[in-house]
Image 1 (cartoon, one colour):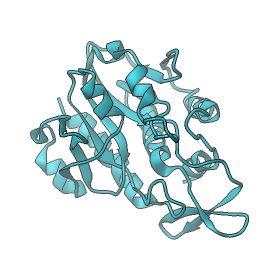
Image 2 (tube, rainbow, N blue to C red; image 1 turned 120 degrees about the vertical axis):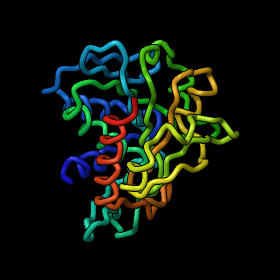
Image 3 (cartoon, rainbow, N blue to C red; image 1 turned 60 degrees about the vertical axis):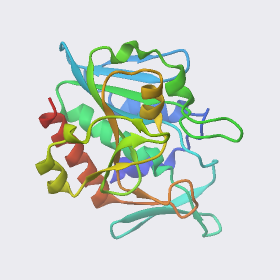
Image 4 (cartoon, helix red, strand yellow; image 1 turned 90 degrees about the vertical axis):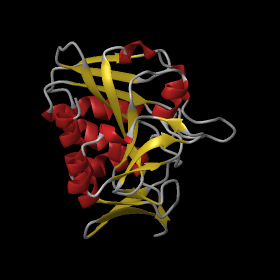
Length: 241
């Protein structure tokens, strides 16, 4: 949980992701990786050498403006309060995804990772700016992308906003879905939806990773749900061909 709390303590409002980038890469300093940053600021990571890869993605930014806050751990729940004792956001959307990716990069021998900047809407600016601007070349040898950027603890988004088909539901072994209590559902917009709109051929999805009330002052996470998401994604990486 200390790693997650450290992520929450860093503000990474869209356009100001430098500190969170440095933190994430610092957590991976002891892992042999190839790391590239494109001209827009997106981070692309490759671990191991293979003819093709599984890929996991998340975004580095959050919607919340910087405030002085204290984290509160109440049983399984993690949230934050400001100096006046009022609830304030923690950026669990999508620091929970970053937590999962850090853990996976330490554990899995072969993996590609895409960390996008400026996924969130910011005033009049539309979201998914990093994924709209990146080169698709990084994904040429990717078999599929599992995004970890969805609220709750039980959803695999296979159809994105605008009826964008991300993948077929039968991509996911039924026994693994049932084991972890996940189901395939339609959902909203995130980076993998933007990539599919641009013509990405690889199937992709967006997976629940244990946060709730995203973008609101009473945002919170359930740590056991985040751990379940990590185990679920880890098993999918082993079982999806």
